[in-house]
Length: 192
Length: 254
Image (cartoon, rainbow over all chains, first blue to last red; front, side):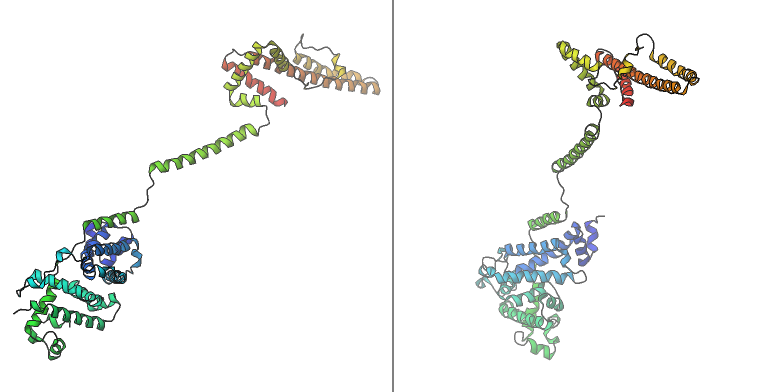
């Protein structure tokens, strides 16, 4: 018997994956609704806001969920699993080294970063956000990934360690470095 | 580190925590700046992927999970082919059983299986015979007298008068059968040799009379068959009855 989309809202991610493996379309819709934006934002930040490549990777990610739902072990945490896949996809993209070449071309126009000359010392949320995005792209992948996962996607240190296959101490040290670097670069926004 | 920037004020930090972040956060201003940065990062507006991406994924999902439905146009010939092949096999089996493996005369088979066709055949043959008198004479002769005699009549019996024209065969046969015991009784009163000779002659007469009755039956059948073949313009029911009778008479003989 087919369930309605509303009934899947009460399902956990793991239950949704089980339903997807049985061909339940509303379960897939619900899962997409929960994770598409977060994963897209994460991939965008990891790929220097290259929208085209980010969309490609997101499509690959959800296609894998559709075609090979059995790859997911339902006894494990889905969030960690899906971010691990996203992280690996991004790493593969780094290896191709094509994204690096197009770093500046790949920047999203919505995040058209203002030049430093136009910045004044008043705190403007929009400007600050733009500066933060810009500085994030300057970080290397491993520090940027830790920062995005921790402070943008809201994952715990333990989850990040699992996703990146590193120990929690390494996660903390990378996070410390990322915050220090961003704080230094965004010093101009300090309150006077 | 995680817990440090969750505190409300720089002064709430312990000395070890302050020393840990002293490199980039030496005072309250820097502390508040970092807090502000982290809050903004967490409040970043979610970026939604384009709708076309979801539509593409929906298509992928449908293709993967919807069972492949073969169109009716493609399915029908397969069913038709199966039906035709089964029908062909059945027809072949029927024909093989009814035509090829029967040892009966083909004309009789035709008469049994399809009386209409048999009649048509007769009509066509009669037309041919009407057009060609020689053929008709030959056919008449064939129908009336078989090419090879069914029973060969011994030479001794040929002299015996044939009672077919004057009296009925049944009466003749019955008369002879009734007479036999009386004649045998009279003969028994004479000597043994004469008795044996008489018995032999009686037995021979018996056999001859039986053969004659058989010959009479065959002649009657042949005459009726000839009538049936010549009676082309007769009603169908009548011809069917004649044919059935004919078959009934012929079957026990052969």
